[in-house]
Length: 317
Length: 317
Image (cartoon, rainbow over all chains, first blue to last red; front, side, top):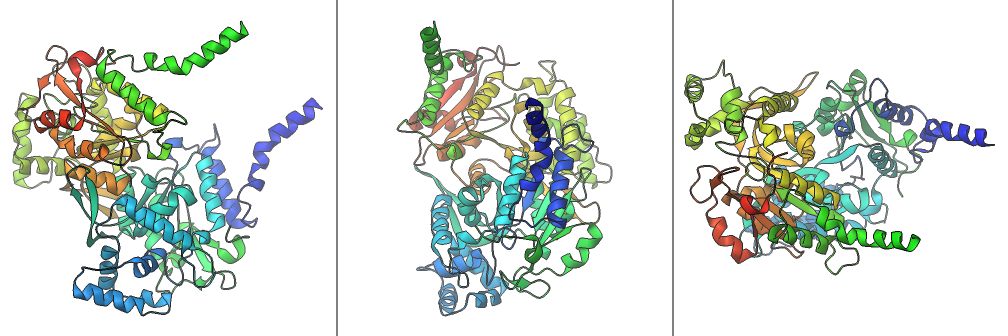
Protein backbone atom coordinates (compact mmCIF):
# COMPACT_ATOMS: atom_id res chain seq x y z
CA UNK A 1 0.00 0.00 0.00
CA UNK A 2 2.77 2.41 0.93
CA UNK A 3 4.61 1.49 -2.23
CA UNK A 4 1.47 2.17 -4.26
CA UNK A 5 1.06 5.62 -2.72
CA UNK A 6 4.68 6.33 -3.43
CA UNK A 7 4.13 5.40 -7.06
CA UNK A 8 1.17 7.77 -7.31
CA UNK A 9 3.27 10.47 -5.72
CA UNK A 10 6.00 9.95 -8.28
CA UNK A 11 3.65 10.00 -11.22
CA UNK A 12 1.79 13.09 -10.08
CA UNK A 13 4.18 15.68 -11.50
CA UNK A 14 4.13 13.92 -14.86
CA UNK A 15 0.34 13.78 -14.92
CA UNK A 16 -0.04 17.39 -13.81
CA UNK A 17 -0.21 18.66 -17.39
CA UNK A 18 -3.53 16.96 -18.04
CA UNK A 19 -5.20 18.93 -15.26
CA UNK A 20 -3.63 22.25 -16.26
CA UNK A 21 -5.42 24.65 -18.58
CA UNK A 22 -8.87 23.01 -18.23
CA UNK A 23 -10.57 25.57 -20.50
CA UNK A 24 -8.34 24.47 -23.39
CA UNK A 25 -9.13 21.56 -25.66
CA UNK A 26 -6.48 18.90 -25.67
CA UNK A 27 -4.28 18.91 -28.71
CA UNK A 28 -1.76 20.95 -30.64
CA UNK A 29 -1.56 24.38 -29.03
CA UNK A 30 -2.20 23.30 -25.47
CA UNK A 31 0.38 20.54 -25.80
CA UNK A 32 2.91 22.91 -27.35
CA UNK A 33 2.51 25.36 -24.46
CA UNK A 34 2.79 22.70 -21.78
CA UNK A 35 5.79 21.12 -23.46
CA UNK A 36 7.62 24.43 -23.74
CA UNK A 37 6.99 25.30 -20.11
CA UNK A 38 8.14 21.83 -19.07
CA UNK A 39 11.34 22.27 -21.13
CA UNK A 40 12.34 25.55 -19.54
CA UNK A 41 11.32 24.79 -15.95
CA UNK A 42 12.42 21.16 -15.58
CA UNK A 43 15.01 21.05 -12.82
CA UNK A 44 18.32 19.73 -14.10
CA UNK A 45 16.89 19.73 -17.62
CA UNK A 46 19.27 20.81 -20.40
CA UNK A 47 17.18 23.89 -21.25
CA UNK A 48 16.29 25.05 -17.76
CA UNK A 49 15.80 28.82 -17.68
CA UNK A 50 16.58 30.55 -14.38
CA UNK A 51 13.49 31.97 -12.66
CA UNK A 52 14.67 35.56 -13.08
CA UNK A 53 14.82 35.06 -16.85
CA UNK A 54 11.31 33.63 -17.07
CA UNK A 55 9.50 36.65 -18.41
CA UNK A 56 6.22 36.32 -20.31
CA UNK A 57 4.48 39.22 -22.03
CA UNK A 58 0.82 39.42 -23.01
CA UNK A 59 -0.95 41.94 -25.17
CA UNK A 60 -4.27 42.97 -23.59
CA UNK A 61 -7.15 43.81 -25.96
CA UNK A 62 -7.98 40.83 -28.16
CA UNK A 63 -5.48 38.63 -26.33
CA UNK A 64 -6.80 38.70 -22.78
CA UNK A 65 -10.13 40.47 -23.38
CA UNK A 66 -12.76 40.86 -26.10
CA UNK A 67 -11.93 43.88 -28.28
CA UNK A 68 -15.00 43.93 -30.53
CA UNK A 69 -17.02 45.88 -31.59
CA UNK A 70 -14.37 48.22 -30.17
CA UNK A 71 -11.76 47.93 -27.44
CA UNK A 72 -12.13 49.11 -23.87
CA UNK A 73 -9.95 52.21 -24.13
CA UNK A 74 -12.02 53.62 -26.98
CA UNK A 75 -15.41 52.82 -25.48
CA UNK A 76 -14.33 54.07 -22.06
CA UNK A 77 -13.19 57.43 -23.38
CA UNK A 78 -16.27 57.94 -25.52
CA UNK A 79 -18.71 56.99 -22.78
CA UNK A 80 -16.97 58.31 -19.73
CA UNK A 81 -15.54 61.68 -20.55
CA UNK A 82 -17.30 64.93 -19.76
CA UNK A 83 -15.26 67.71 -21.32
CA UNK A 84 -16.47 70.88 -19.67
CA UNK A 85 -13.81 73.48 -20.19
CA UNK A 86 -12.15 72.10 -23.27
CA UNK A 87 -11.49 73.79 -26.58
CA UNK A 88 -14.52 73.92 -28.91
CA UNK A 89 -13.15 71.33 -31.31
CA UNK A 90 -12.84 68.84 -28.48
CA UNK A 91 -16.37 69.52 -27.37
CA UNK A 92 -17.53 69.01 -30.94
CA UNK A 93 -15.68 65.71 -31.08
CA UNK A 94 -17.32 64.44 -27.92
CA UNK A 95 -20.72 65.58 -29.15
CA UNK A 96 -20.19 63.50 -32.28
CA UNK A 97 -19.20 60.49 -30.20
CA UNK A 98 -22.31 60.67 -28.07
CA UNK A 99 -24.48 60.71 -31.16
CA UNK A 100 -23.10 57.35 -32.27
CA UNK A 101 -25.55 54.55 -31.68
CA UNK A 102 -23.10 51.78 -32.44
CA UNK A 103 -19.78 51.22 -30.66
CA UNK A 104 -18.21 50.02 -33.90
CA UNK A 105 -18.52 53.51 -35.37
CA UNK A 106 -15.81 54.63 -32.96
CA UNK A 107 -13.29 52.61 -34.94
CA UNK A 108 -13.71 55.07 -37.80
CA UNK A 109 -12.13 57.95 -35.86
CA UNK A 110 -9.04 59.49 -37.42
CA UNK A 111 -5.81 58.98 -35.55
CA UNK A 112 -5.71 62.67 -34.66
CA UNK A 113 -9.18 62.50 -33.13
CA UNK A 114 -8.26 59.31 -31.32
CA UNK A 115 -5.24 60.98 -29.75
CA UNK A 116 -7.40 63.93 -28.71
CA UNK A 117 -9.98 61.60 -27.22
CA UNK A 118 -7.38 59.65 -25.29
CA UNK A 119 -5.66 62.78 -24.09
CA UNK A 120 -8.85 64.35 -22.77
CA UNK A 121 -10.04 61.01 -21.46
CA UNK A 122 -7.75 61.22 -18.46
CA UNK A 123 -7.06 64.92 -18.07
CA UNK A 124 -6.47 66.42 -14.62
CA UNK A 125 -6.76 63.07 -12.89
CA UNK A 126 -4.33 61.12 -10.73
CA UNK A 127 -3.50 57.43 -11.17
CA UNK A 128 -5.84 56.58 -8.31
CA UNK A 129 -8.75 58.60 -9.73
CA UNK A 130 -8.51 57.01 -13.15
CA UNK A 131 -8.06 53.52 -11.86
CA UNK A 132 -11.11 53.82 -9.61
CA UNK A 133 -13.24 55.22 -12.39
CA UNK A 134 -12.01 52.67 -14.93
CA UNK A 135 -12.59 49.77 -12.54
CA UNK A 136 -16.15 50.96 -12.06
CA UNK A 137 -16.64 51.17 -15.79
CA UNK A 138 -15.17 47.74 -16.60
CA UNK A 139 -17.23 46.07 -13.91
CA UNK A 140 -20.51 47.86 -14.65
CA UNK A 141 -20.63 48.80 -18.34
CA UNK A 142 -22.63 46.39 -20.44
CA UNK A 143 -21.13 44.86 -23.55
CA UNK A 144 -23.59 45.42 -26.44
CA UNK A 145 -23.57 41.83 -27.65
CA UNK A 146 -23.01 39.68 -24.58
CA UNK A 147 -25.06 41.79 -22.20
CA UNK A 148 -22.51 41.18 -19.51
CA UNK A 149 -20.10 43.52 -17.79
CA UNK A 150 -16.92 43.96 -19.81
CA UNK A 151 -14.88 42.66 -16.90
CA UNK A 152 -16.56 39.30 -17.48
CA UNK A 153 -15.22 39.19 -21.02
CA UNK A 154 -11.69 38.26 -20.09
CA UNK A 155 -10.76 35.04 -21.90
CA UNK A 156 -10.82 32.20 -19.40
CA UNK A 157 -8.22 30.10 -21.27
CA UNK A 158 -5.75 32.99 -21.31
CA UNK A 159 -6.31 33.75 -17.62
CA UNK A 160 -5.59 30.10 -16.86
CA UNK A 161 -2.46 30.22 -18.98
CA UNK A 162 -1.26 33.40 -17.31
CA UNK A 163 -1.73 31.97 -13.83
CA UNK A 164 -0.19 28.68 -14.84
CA UNK A 165 2.93 30.58 -15.94
CA UNK A 166 3.02 32.56 -12.69
CA UNK A 167 2.81 29.28 -10.78
CA UNK A 168 5.79 28.06 -12.82
CA UNK A 169 7.86 31.02 -11.66
CA UNK A 170 7.25 33.32 -14.63
CA UNK A 171 6.98 37.06 -14.18
CA UNK A 172 4.03 38.05 -16.30
CA UNK A 173 3.69 41.50 -17.87
CA UNK A 174 0.88 43.02 -19.89
CA UNK A 175 2.15 45.18 -22.76
CA UNK A 176 -0.73 47.13 -24.22
CA UNK A 177 -1.48 49.93 -26.64
CA UNK A 178 -4.20 51.11 -24.27
CA UNK A 179 -3.37 53.64 -21.58
CA UNK A 180 -1.65 51.79 -18.73
CA UNK A 181 -3.86 53.15 -15.93
CA UNK A 182 -6.98 51.90 -17.64
CA UNK A 183 -5.68 48.36 -17.88
CA UNK A 184 -4.11 48.50 -14.41
CA UNK A 185 -7.54 49.09 -12.93
CA UNK A 186 -8.57 45.52 -13.70
CA UNK A 187 -5.19 43.83 -14.24
CA UNK A 188 -4.41 43.61 -10.56
CA UNK A 189 -7.76 42.58 -9.06
CA UNK A 190 -9.17 40.55 -11.95
CA UNK A 191 -6.26 39.28 -14.03
CA UNK A 192 -3.72 38.81 -11.25
CA UNK A 193 -1.04 41.00 -12.82
CA UNK A 194 0.24 43.69 -10.43
CA UNK A 195 -0.04 47.31 -11.57
CA UNK A 196 3.70 47.73 -11.97
CA UNK A 197 3.70 44.86 -14.47
CA UNK A 198 1.41 46.72 -16.86
CA UNK A 199 3.27 48.58 -19.60
CA UNK A 200 1.07 50.76 -21.78
CA UNK A 201 0.48 53.98 -23.63
CA UNK A 202 0.55 57.23 -21.72
CA UNK A 203 -0.85 60.70 -21.68
CA UNK A 204 1.39 63.59 -20.72
CA UNK A 205 1.67 64.27 -17.02
CA UNK A 206 2.87 66.98 -14.69
CA UNK A 207 4.01 66.94 -11.10
CA UNK A 208 1.84 69.25 -9.05
CA UNK A 209 3.95 70.15 -6.03
CA UNK A 210 2.63 71.31 -2.71
CA UNK A 211 1.32 69.26 0.09
CA UNK A 212 -0.22 66.88 -0.85
CA UNK A 213 1.74 66.65 -4.07
CA UNK A 214 0.11 64.84 -6.96
CA UNK A 215 0.77 63.66 -10.49
CA UNK A 216 -1.87 65.00 -12.84
CA UNK A 217 -2.60 63.92 -16.39
CA UNK A 218 -2.51 66.70 -18.98
CA UNK A 219 -5.05 66.71 -21.81
CA UNK A 220 -2.47 65.55 -24.36
CA UNK A 221 -1.62 62.09 -25.49
CA UNK A 222 2.08 61.24 -25.27
CA UNK A 223 3.22 57.78 -26.36
CA UNK A 224 1.51 55.00 -28.25
CA UNK A 225 2.96 51.66 -27.25
CA UNK A 226 2.47 49.46 -30.28
CA UNK A 227 4.61 47.50 -32.73
CA UNK A 228 8.31 48.20 -32.25
CA UNK A 229 7.54 50.56 -29.38
CA UNK A 230 6.31 47.56 -27.41
CA UNK A 231 9.80 46.10 -27.68
CA UNK A 232 11.50 49.39 -26.79
CA UNK A 233 9.32 49.69 -23.70
CA UNK A 234 9.98 46.07 -22.70
CA UNK A 235 13.69 46.75 -22.99
CA UNK A 236 13.47 49.99 -21.07
CA UNK A 237 11.27 48.77 -18.26
CA UNK A 238 12.01 45.10 -17.83
CA UNK A 239 15.64 45.22 -18.94
CA UNK A 240 15.71 41.68 -20.30
CA UNK A 241 14.28 39.76 -23.24
CA UNK A 242 11.04 37.83 -22.58
CA UNK A 243 10.98 34.14 -23.45
CA UNK A 244 7.22 33.91 -24.04
CA UNK A 245 4.96 36.35 -25.89
CA UNK A 246 1.25 36.32 -26.68
CA UNK A 247 -0.62 38.71 -28.93
CA UNK A 248 -3.35 38.79 -31.52
CA UNK A 249 -2.54 41.49 -34.05
CA UNK A 250 0.20 42.79 -36.32
CA UNK A 251 1.01 45.33 -33.61
CA UNK A 252 2.34 42.43 -31.53
CA UNK A 253 4.69 40.93 -34.10
CA UNK A 254 7.80 42.86 -33.09
CA UNK A 255 7.27 41.69 -29.51
CA UNK A 256 6.82 38.08 -30.60
CA UNK A 257 9.89 38.29 -32.77
CA UNK A 258 11.95 39.72 -29.94
CA UNK A 259 10.85 36.97 -27.54
CA UNK A 260 11.73 34.20 -29.96
CA UNK A 261 15.07 35.38 -31.31
CA UNK A 262 17.23 35.48 -28.20
CA UNK A 263 19.82 33.02 -26.95
CA UNK A 264 17.32 31.36 -24.59
CA UNK A 265 14.46 29.15 -25.80
CA UNK A 266 11.47 31.25 -26.87
CA UNK A 267 7.77 30.64 -27.46
CA UNK A 268 5.19 32.88 -29.11
CA UNK A 269 1.57 32.56 -30.11
CA UNK A 270 -1.16 34.66 -31.70
CA UNK A 271 -4.82 34.39 -30.73
CA UNK A 272 -6.68 33.91 -34.00
CA UNK A 273 -10.28 35.07 -33.78
CA UNK A 274 -12.04 32.50 -35.96
CA UNK A 275 -15.20 31.77 -34.01
CA UNK A 276 -18.15 33.89 -35.15
CA UNK A 277 -20.58 31.74 -33.16
CA UNK A 278 -19.11 32.17 -29.73
CA UNK A 279 -17.11 35.35 -30.33
CA UNK A 280 -16.05 37.23 -33.48
CA UNK A 281 -14.27 36.28 -36.68
CA UNK A 282 -11.71 38.83 -37.84
CA UNK A 283 -8.15 38.96 -39.03
CA UNK A 284 -6.80 40.50 -42.27
CA UNK A 285 -9.34 43.29 -42.72
CA UNK A 286 -10.42 44.47 -39.30
CA UNK A 287 -10.19 48.11 -38.28
CA UNK A 288 -9.42 46.68 -34.83
CA UNK A 289 -6.93 43.86 -34.20
CA UNK A 290 -5.79 43.47 -37.78
CA UNK A 291 -3.79 40.28 -38.23
CA UNK A 292 -2.48 40.10 -41.76
CA UNK A 293 1.30 39.99 -41.77
CA UNK A 294 1.15 37.80 -38.69
CA UNK A 295 -0.68 35.04 -40.54
CA UNK A 296 2.14 34.92 -43.11
CA UNK A 297 4.89 35.18 -40.56
CA UNK A 298 3.69 32.72 -37.93
CA UNK A 299 4.50 29.49 -39.80
CA UNK A 300 7.88 30.86 -40.91
CA UNK A 301 8.84 31.80 -37.37
CA UNK A 302 7.39 28.77 -35.66
CA UNK A 303 4.79 30.81 -33.77
CA UNK A 304 1.56 29.04 -32.87
CA UNK A 305 -1.87 30.26 -33.83
CA UNK A 306 -4.36 29.85 -31.01
CA UNK A 307 -7.70 29.06 -32.65
CA UNK A 308 -10.55 30.43 -30.57
CA UNK A 309 -12.84 27.94 -32.27
CA UNK A 310 -10.90 24.75 -31.80
CA UNK A 311 -8.38 25.44 -29.01
CA UNK A 312 -10.70 26.94 -26.45
CA UNK A 313 -13.30 24.81 -24.70
CA UNK A 314 -14.76 27.62 -22.62
CA UNK A 315 -14.43 31.29 -23.50
CA UNK A 316 -15.60 33.18 -20.43
CA UNK A 317 -15.75 32.53 -16.71
CA UNK B 1 7.99 23.13 29.69
CA UNK B 2 5.48 23.14 26.87
CA UNK B 3 3.93 26.25 28.32
CA UNK B 4 7.31 27.92 28.48
CA UNK B 5 8.05 27.14 24.83
CA UNK B 6 4.67 28.51 23.90
CA UNK B 7 5.47 31.72 25.72
CA UNK B 8 8.77 32.07 23.87
CA UNK B 9 6.92 31.46 20.63
CA UNK B 10 4.46 34.19 21.47
CA UNK B 11 7.10 36.70 22.40
CA UNK B 12 9.24 36.08 19.35
CA UNK B 13 7.42 38.37 16.95
CA UNK B 14 7.53 41.20 19.48
CA UNK B 15 11.24 40.77 20.05
CA UNK B 16 12.02 40.51 16.36
CA UNK B 17 12.72 44.24 16.04
CA UNK B 18 15.79 44.11 18.23
CA UNK B 19 17.52 41.64 15.92
CA UNK B 20 16.56 43.51 12.74
CA UNK B 21 18.93 45.98 11.12
CA UNK B 22 22.04 44.84 13.02
CA UNK B 23 24.32 47.33 11.20
CA UNK B 24 22.31 50.22 12.65
CA UNK B 25 22.94 51.74 16.02
CA UNK B 26 19.95 51.59 18.31
CA UNK B 27 18.14 54.84 18.70
CA UNK B 28 16.17 57.46 16.84
CA UNK B 29 16.26 56.60 13.17
CA UNK B 30 16.33 52.84 13.52
CA UNK B 31 13.46 52.97 16.00
CA UNK B 32 11.47 55.28 13.74
CA UNK B 33 11.86 52.92 10.79
CA UNK B 34 10.93 49.83 12.78
CA UNK B 35 7.94 51.56 14.33
CA UNK B 36 6.63 52.74 10.98
CA UNK B 37 6.95 49.30 9.43
CA UNK B 38 5.23 47.77 12.44
CA UNK B 39 2.36 50.30 12.12
CA UNK B 40 1.66 49.53 8.47
CA UNK B 41 2.16 45.76 8.58
CA UNK B 42 0.54 44.83 11.89
CA UNK B 43 -2.34 42.49 11.11
CA UNK B 44 -5.65 43.92 12.29
CA UNK B 45 -3.84 47.13 13.21
CA UNK B 46 -5.71 50.37 12.51
CA UNK B 47 -3.14 51.51 9.92
CA UNK B 48 -2.49 48.23 8.15
CA UNK B 49 -1.50 48.85 4.53
CA UNK B 50 -2.40 46.09 2.08
CA UNK B 51 0.66 44.27 0.67
CA UNK B 52 0.02 45.54 -2.86
CA UNK B 53 0.22 49.13 -1.59
CA UNK B 54 3.51 48.58 0.23
CA UNK B 55 5.85 50.24 -2.21
CA UNK B 56 9.24 51.57 -1.13
CA UNK B 57 11.55 53.58 -3.39
CA UNK B 58 15.28 54.06 -2.96
CA UNK B 59 17.61 56.40 -4.76
CA UNK B 60 20.84 54.62 -5.74
CA UNK B 61 24.07 56.69 -5.74
CA UNK B 62 24.72 58.12 -2.29
CA UNK B 63 21.76 56.27 -0.81
CA UNK B 64 22.67 52.65 -1.47
CA UNK B 65 26.25 53.12 -2.70
CA UNK B 66 29.19 55.47 -2.21
CA UNK B 67 29.04 58.30 -4.77
CA UNK B 68 32.31 60.07 -4.02
CA UNK B 69 34.69 61.20 -5.47
CA UNK B 70 32.24 60.64 -8.34
CA UNK B 71 29.32 58.30 -8.90
CA UNK B 72 29.46 55.02 -10.78
CA UNK B 73 27.76 56.19 -13.98
CA UNK B 74 30.31 58.94 -14.50
CA UNK B 75 33.37 56.86 -13.66
CA UNK B 76 32.10 53.94 -15.73
CA UNK B 77 31.56 56.03 -18.84
CA UNK B 78 34.90 57.80 -18.54
CA UNK B 79 36.87 54.63 -17.93
CA UNK B 80 35.01 52.14 -20.06
CA UNK B 81 34.15 53.82 -23.30
CA UNK B 82 36.22 53.44 -26.45
CA UNK B 83 34.73 55.79 -29.04
CA UNK B 84 36.14 54.62 -32.34
CA UNK B 85 33.94 56.00 -35.05
CA UNK B 86 32.47 58.95 -33.19
CA UNK B 87 32.44 62.59 -34.21
CA UNK B 88 35.72 64.43 -33.52
CA UNK B 89 34.30 66.49 -30.65
CA UNK B 90 33.34 63.27 -28.86
CA UNK B 91 36.79 61.82 -29.37
CA UNK B 92 38.26 65.03 -28.01
CA UNK B 93 36.01 64.78 -24.97
CA UNK B 94 37.09 61.24 -24.23
CA UNK B 95 40.73 62.17 -24.71
CA UNK B 96 40.26 64.89 -22.09
CA UNK B 97 38.67 62.40 -19.71
CA UNK B 98 41.51 59.93 -19.98
CA UNK B 99 44.00 62.64 -19.14
CA UNK B 100 42.31 63.25 -15.79
CA UNK B 101 44.27 61.81 -12.94
CA UNK B 102 41.57 62.34 -10.35
CA UNK B 103 38.03 60.97 -10.54
CA UNK B 104 36.68 64.09 -8.87
CA UNK B 105 37.63 66.15 -11.90
CA UNK B 106 34.84 64.42 -13.80
CA UNK B 107 32.30 66.30 -11.69
CA UNK B 108 33.36 69.48 -13.43
CA UNK B 109 31.99 68.38 -16.80
CA UNK B 110 29.34 70.62 -18.32
CA UNK B 111 25.87 69.15 -18.56
CA UNK B 112 26.18 69.03 -22.36
CA UNK B 113 29.41 67.03 -22.12
CA UNK B 114 27.87 64.78 -19.53
CA UNK B 115 24.94 64.01 -21.80
CA UNK B 116 27.37 63.27 -24.65
CA UNK B 117 29.42 61.01 -22.42
CA UNK B 118 26.36 59.11 -21.21
CA UNK B 119 24.96 58.79 -24.70
CA UNK B 120 28.18 57.39 -26.15
CA UNK B 121 28.77 55.30 -23.07
CA UNK B 122 26.19 52.76 -24.15
CA UNK B 123 25.96 53.19 -27.90
CA UNK B 124 25.22 50.22 -30.14
CA UNK B 125 24.85 47.83 -27.24
CA UNK B 126 21.96 45.69 -26.06
CA UNK B 127 20.68 45.50 -22.48
CA UNK B 128 22.55 42.23 -22.00
CA UNK B 129 25.85 43.61 -23.35
CA UNK B 130 25.78 46.64 -21.11
CA UNK B 131 24.72 44.77 -18.04
CA UNK B 132 27.50 42.23 -18.47
CA UNK B 133 30.10 44.91 -19.02
CA UNK B 134 28.83 47.05 -16.14
CA UNK B 135 28.72 44.08 -13.77
CA UNK B 136 32.34 43.35 -14.63
CA UNK B 137 33.27 46.94 -14.00
CA UNK B 138 31.45 47.26 -10.65
CA UNK B 139 32.95 44.04 -9.37
CA UNK B 140 36.51 44.65 -10.59
CA UNK B 141 37.16 48.41 -10.72
CA UNK B 142 39.04 49.70 -7.72
CA UNK B 143 37.71 52.65 -5.72
CA UNK B 144 40.53 55.21 -5.40
CA UNK B 145 40.16 55.69 -1.65
CA UNK B 146 38.97 52.38 -0.30
CA UNK B 147 41.01 50.19 -2.63
CA UNK B 148 38.12 47.80 -2.86
CA UNK B 149 35.87 46.93 -5.77
CA UNK B 150 33.03 49.40 -6.12
CA UNK B 151 30.51 46.61 -5.68
CA UNK B 152 31.76 46.29 -2.11
CA UNK B 153 30.82 49.88 -1.42
CA UNK B 154 27.13 49.28 -1.08
CA UNK B 155 25.97 50.52 2.31
CA UNK B 156 25.35 47.53 4.54
CA UNK B 157 22.71 49.30 6.70
CA UNK B 158 20.69 50.23 3.61
CA UNK B 159 20.92 46.71 2.16
CA UNK B 160 19.62 45.37 5.45
CA UNK B 161 16.81 47.88 5.45
CA UNK B 162 15.87 47.05 1.87
CA UNK B 163 15.75 43.32 2.58
CA UNK B 164 13.90 43.87 5.82
CA UNK B 165 11.20 45.74 3.87
CA UNK B 166 11.03 42.99 1.24
CA UNK B 167 10.57 40.45 4.03
CA UNK B 168 7.70 42.60 5.33
CA UNK B 169 5.94 42.35 1.97
CA UNK B 170 7.20 45.60 0.46
CA UNK B 171 7.92 45.87 -3.23
CA UNK B 172 11.19 47.73 -3.43
CA UNK B 173 12.17 49.89 -6.38
CA UNK B 174 15.39 51.73 -7.13
CA UNK B 175 14.73 55.13 -8.76
CA UNK B 176 18.00 56.53 -10.02
CA UNK B 177 19.38 59.33 -12.15
CA UNK B 178 21.97 56.88 -13.50
CA UNK B 179 21.19 54.89 -16.61
CA UNK B 180 18.92 52.00 -15.61
CA UNK B 181 20.97 49.24 -17.28
CA UNK B 182 24.07 50.22 -15.36
CA UNK B 183 22.33 49.95 -12.02
CA UNK B 184 20.42 46.82 -13.06
CA UNK B 185 23.71 45.02 -13.57
CA UNK B 186 24.33 44.92 -9.83
CA UNK B 187 20.84 45.57 -8.45
CA UNK B 188 19.60 42.06 -9.11
CA UNK B 189 22.60 39.95 -8.06
CA UNK B 190 24.04 42.16 -5.31
CA UNK B 191 21.24 44.33 -3.96
CA UNK B 192 18.35 41.89 -4.37
CA UNK B 193 16.19 44.21 -6.46
CA UNK B 194 15.03 42.61 -9.73
CA UNK B 195 15.94 44.38 -12.95
CA UNK B 196 12.36 45.35 -13.69
CA UNK B 197 12.25 47.22 -10.37
CA UNK B 198 15.02 49.60 -11.42
CA UNK B 199 13.76 52.88 -12.85
CA UNK B 200 16.45 55.13 -14.26
CA UNK B 201 17.68 57.48 -16.92
CA UNK B 202 17.83 56.25 -20.49
CA UNK B 203 19.68 56.70 -23.72
CA UNK B 204 17.76 56.65 -26.99
CA UNK B 205 17.16 53.23 -28.47
CA UNK B 206 16.09 51.67 -31.70
CA UNK B 207 14.57 48.33 -32.55
CA UNK B 208 16.81 46.49 -35.00
CA UNK B 209 14.48 44.03 -36.72
CA UNK B 210 15.59 40.86 -38.40
CA UNK B 211 16.31 37.56 -36.85
CA UNK B 212 17.61 37.80 -34.20
CA UNK B 213 16.00 41.13 -33.50
CA UNK B 214 17.66 43.35 -30.94
CA UNK B 215 17.24 46.65 -29.13
CA UNK B 216 20.29 48.83 -29.65
CA UNK B 217 21.27 51.98 -27.78
CA UNK B 218 21.84 55.03 -29.93
CA UNK B 219 24.65 57.45 -29.05
CA UNK B 220 22.24 60.03 -27.67
CA UNK B 221 21.05 60.58 -24.16
CA UNK B 222 17.27 60.69 -23.79
CA UNK B 223 15.81 61.25 -20.34
CA UNK B 224 17.32 62.31 -17.06
CA UNK B 225 15.32 60.86 -14.19
CA UNK B 226 15.83 63.31 -11.36
CA UNK B 227 13.75 65.60 -9.18
CA UNK B 228 10.13 65.78 -10.37
CA UNK B 229 10.91 63.33 -13.16
CA UNK B 230 11.49 60.68 -10.54
CA UNK B 231 7.89 61.13 -9.46
CA UNK B 232 6.55 61.14 -13.01
CA UNK B 233 8.39 57.90 -13.72
CA UNK B 234 7.15 56.31 -10.51
CA UNK B 235 3.62 57.22 -11.51
CA UNK B 236 4.06 55.97 -15.04
CA UNK B 237 5.75 52.70 -14.22
CA UNK B 238 4.44 51.67 -10.82
CA UNK B 239 1.01 53.25 -11.09
CA UNK B 240 0.65 53.90 -7.38
CA UNK B 241 2.12 56.17 -4.73
CA UNK B 242 4.96 54.72 -2.64
CA UNK B 243 4.62 54.83 1.14
CA UNK B 244 8.35 54.85 1.90
CA UNK B 245 11.11 56.81 0.16
CA UNK B 246 14.84 57.07 0.77
CA UNK B 247 17.26 59.47 -0.86
CA UNK B 248 20.27 61.62 -0.10
CA UNK B 249 20.12 64.72 -2.28
CA UNK B 250 17.85 67.55 -3.35
CA UNK B 251 17.07 65.52 -6.49
CA UNK B 252 15.16 63.12 -4.27
CA UNK B 253 12.93 65.65 -2.51
CA UNK B 254 10.00 65.48 -4.93
CA UNK B 255 9.96 61.70 -4.51
CA UNK B 256 10.06 61.99 -0.72
CA UNK B 257 7.29 64.56 -0.81
CA UNK B 258 5.15 62.36 -3.03
CA UNK B 259 5.59 59.34 -0.75
CA UNK B 260 4.63 61.26 2.36
CA UNK B 261 1.65 63.26 1.15
CA UNK B 262 -0.81 60.57 0.15
CA UNK B 263 -3.84 59.23 1.99
CA UNK B 264 -1.87 56.26 3.38
CA UNK B 265 0.78 56.60 6.10
CA UNK B 266 4.12 57.65 4.62
CA UNK B 267 7.74 57.60 5.72
CA UNK B 268 10.77 59.28 4.20
CA UNK B 269 14.41 59.69 5.11
CA UNK B 270 17.57 61.28 3.71
CA UNK B 271 21.01 59.79 4.17
CA UNK B 272 23.16 62.62 5.55
CA UNK B 273 26.84 62.13 4.76
CA UNK B 274 28.44 63.51 7.91
CA UNK B 275 31.23 61.03 8.55
CA UNK B 276 34.57 62.16 7.06
CA UNK B 277 36.42 59.47 9.01
CA UNK B 278 34.65 56.43 7.68
CA UNK B 279 33.20 57.91 4.50
CA UNK B 280 32.77 61.48 3.24
CA UNK B 281 31.25 64.64 4.64
CA UNK B 282 29.21 66.63 2.13
CA UNK B 283 25.83 68.29 1.86
CA UNK B 284 25.08 71.92 0.90
CA UNK B 285 28.00 72.55 -1.42
CA UNK B 286 28.86 69.33 -3.17
CA UNK B 287 29.02 69.07 -6.96
CA UNK B 288 27.66 65.54 -6.39
CA UNK B 289 24.78 64.72 -4.06
CA UNK B 290 24.00 68.28 -3.06
CA UNK B 291 21.63 68.37 -0.08
CA UNK B 292 20.71 71.93 0.71
CA UNK B 293 16.98 72.44 0.38
CA UNK B 294 16.50 68.98 1.88
CA UNK B 295 18.13 70.00 5.16
CA UNK B 296 15.63 72.86 5.50
CA UNK B 297 12.66 70.82 4.42
CA UNK B 298 13.23 67.60 6.38
CA UNK B 299 12.19 68.90 9.83
CA UNK B 300 9.17 70.72 8.34
CA UNK B 301 7.96 67.59 6.59
CA UNK B 302 8.77 65.13 9.32
CA UNK B 303 11.41 63.36 7.23
CA UNK B 304 14.25 61.69 9.12
CA UNK B 305 17.90 62.39 8.53
CA UNK B 306 19.99 59.23 8.60
CA UNK B 307 23.35 60.21 10.07
CA UNK B 308 26.11 58.06 8.60
CA UNK B 309 28.21 58.91 11.64
CA UNK B 310 25.78 58.09 14.40
CA UNK B 311 23.10 55.87 12.89
CA UNK B 312 25.31 53.35 11.13
CA UNK B 313 27.37 50.88 13.13
CA UNK B 314 28.97 49.22 10.11
CA UNK B 315 29.23 50.84 6.70
CA UNK B 316 30.31 48.08 4.35
CA UNK B 317 29.94 44.32 4.19
